[in-house]
Length: 88
Image (cartoon, rainbow, N blue to C red; front, top):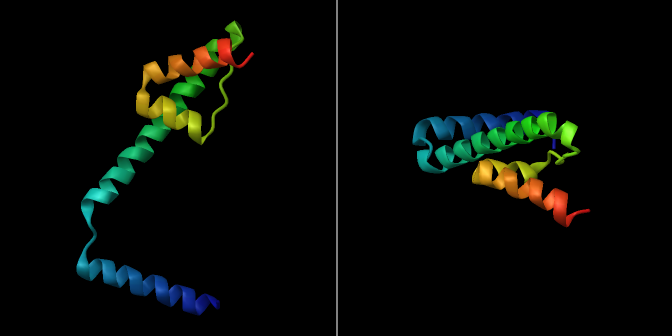
């Protein structure tokens, strides 16, 4: 597809969204989910920084960030327990 066509389609969608409006609830849910993923990533980063001296390393990826972000501190503790005792 040529760049002119892509740009015209995107501009058309932007104009359509400006005229009709966007449904706010799905956008709000996506935004809250992204914030929780970022918080989960920060939890994992802190756990890896502090747990380095205790030989704790949890990989930071989408799944572990989602678990620690949506479940909070109990999810982070569950990931540490899984890493230490189940995955040897």
